[in-house]
Each structure stands twice: as C-alpha cells, then as structure tokens.
Image (cartoon, rainbow, N blue to C red; front, side, top):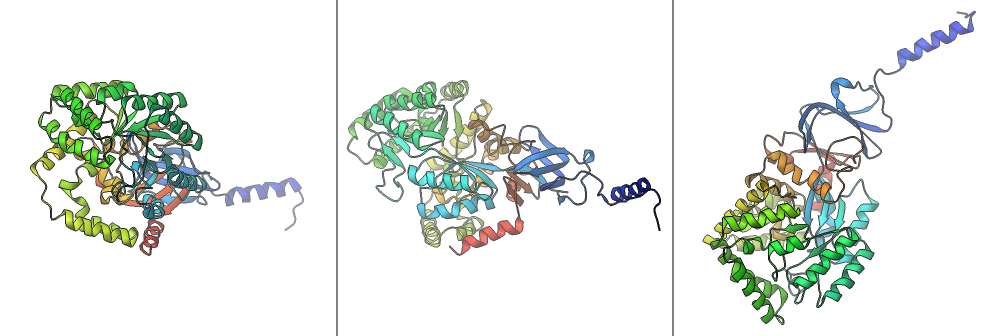
Length: 486
C-alpha cells in the first residue's frame, strides 16, 4: 500500500500510537496501592483509596474512583486491607543489652516499627546506630537518641550489675551538667534525658540549657523533687509516669521531705540500691494514701505545661500480667541471640514461681487507672516499651503496648495516634511523618484487618514500607528467619 500524502501517513501513525498507549495515569518509578482503606490517625477511616509512592514519599492520595491507573504502573491491590502510618516505639534502649542491638533493626521493621526513640545509653554506642540508620533509610528504622541518662551522684545505671548497665553519667555539680549538655549537643543528640538522682539545681540547668538549644528534656522526675515542680521547671515528658504516685498522695509533702533525708544519708551508697530503697520505702505508702483531688491537681499542671507521658504500660504491669511467659510471646525469643534467649527463659521460669503480692495487683490497677486519667485530662501520650528491658522483644512489644493503652481507656484510634502522629509532633516532624498524606515520607504498614475494630489487628502485618521500600510478608518473614541463625 502506497501513501500519496505524507500528512495522511502521520495521521494513521498517531491513531495507532493512541490505540497502543495504556489508558489512565502512569507514574514512573512509583508504587501504586489501589482500593485500600486508609486509617488516618486524626481523621479516621477513609475507604477505597489509591496511594502513589515515589522517591520515598507519598506522591498522591486519592479516592480510587477519582484516579484511573494505567496498566503498566506497579500496582498493589489493597482490596480488603488497611493502611496506617509506620509505628514508633518511643522508648527503647540499644545499649541495655549491647549484644542484642544488631538484631533490633530487623526486628523493629518486621513488626512495623519504622521509627524509634532511644532514651538512654552510652553516646558512642547509640550514635553508632543512629548513623547506621541515616545511611540506610529504606532498610532501617529512623533512630532518635538522647545519649546517656544525665544523673546525679550516686548514679543509678553505673554498670554495677547486669540490671544496671552503664547507661548513665553521674554529675556532681551543676557545672558538670553544663559541660555534659554542651558535649552531647556537639556530638548530636535529639533530646536529653534527666534521671532520678539529680539535684533540683542540676535538673534546672538541664531544662534551661535544652530550651536554649531547642531540644526537649524527658526523663524520670528526680527523687529530690515533686512532679509539679519538675513540670513547671520545663520537663517536656515523663517516662513510665515514674514517681508520679509520690506526688499524688495526700502526704506528698512529707514523702518529699523523707526522700531528701534518705538521699542525703545515702551519698556513699550504690545508686541503684539507693533508688530501690526509696521506692520500697515510699511507693506502697503513696498508693495507700492516694488522693484523687491531689492527683487531679498534678495532672492539671502537666496538661497546662504540656508535659507528655510515655507510660510503658506493658512493662509496668508485666509482673502481674506476665504476658512474657505466654508461649506465643516466648516464641519470639528465637529471633534474639541464643544466649540472651536462654537467660530470659530461665529468669522467666524463676519469676513465674513467685506469687504477686496484693500490692503488686494494687499497683497494676493504679497504673491502668492513672493512664486513663492522664488521657482524660488531655495530656499527650506516646507509646513506648523500654525494650529490651522486661523480656520485651523489640518490635513485638510495641503491639502489646497498644493493647495495654486500649485497656487503660484509649480508643483504638487514640492508641494508634500514640505511636504515629504523636511522636512526629513531639519531634516537630508532623509535616513529614505520622499520617498518610501527600509529600510525607512513605513509612507505612499494610494490615490484613481493621485495627479500629480490634487494636490487636496491628499485628496482622501484610507489608511494611520504609521510606518507599516495599517489604511484603515473604520478605518480612525472611528478615525474621535470618535472625533465627544468630
């Protein structure tokens, strides 16, 4: 066939090209998740959505009815599945068992934890893991670090025994604190952590210098202080609600006076021993003298000052609830180094032979009730576990914490907030992380079932996406399988 008219030839070619071109939108080098239900931590459920991910970020979020994907896109069918932001564990310790640290990255990712906040350890060691995460943003969780616990003297985590590894630095004077804060800031920490043996003067130096440097201070309320004073001084967040009970008692003033006397007499004691002595002396007394009006006064101050709480409920209730002794929980020990797993099993065997005291149960009940009161008062909460303390397997333990928060009175959506948007806000990263929105980093989880129906459905992970890197169930299982040989 001969074409006498060149323009006619081009017309025919154009028609053929149009017919060959895939219909719909094409996104180059992108991952498209189609027909999935998104759970936005703040807005709730959005059904039948399409999410396009490119260059590590969320490029587009749209109702599936409003976007037609070309067949040559890389498309994942999300029908019947649920998409949530990647989870945070806001209280971890890479340095608590150094031998476990190399396993923690893969464990976190396999369980959908895409960001962590390390709350205390030798700066050389924690900085190592932060740097490794920065170099491998698609295959490692994001790591924020506090460096060592900044403590007074005697310091608690001084390396005196295996339960008190050298996670802290003991400061004798306020000037010591100033030098340490400047040193840690120069190395590059994301926050500071104040600890229980600090004097009020040392504590005030920490919060003032942190404010000047634009960093937050978390920690335990020093035993030499009460919660209201620490919050008013500028404490940004509290871990474990530690020592809160001492300030919620009707005899709180007398307890503070007694603590200061014991601290003065114990200057030459081992830090961990002295702290335990005070806790054993006062915790039960404080709970027995709990005053609801006094507690609400304290909580109102925390709310006014925006002093966040990281309650670590699963840890605090561990001795009475003993989830770590469940066969399903102990099955996760195959993913940690064998020597540590064996030690954990032996210790758990010994613990299960001990019957909790009536006060152990009373404290558990107090803890759950107080978390509920904290939430009702409007104080922000972050989900954290203290892994690997308390036989809490990295990654897996975060899901136990979400279950515990719901038991304490949060809705499943509110529990999800504590592990997604709240930590992002804490670090002023809410425009980058914590939601499924355009321009945010693509740190995401695909779940097989709706966690708003049952918070334990966060454990039914179909896939994890870390900064755009898609890891399906098979790949996640391979990560876990690789840890079994350690």
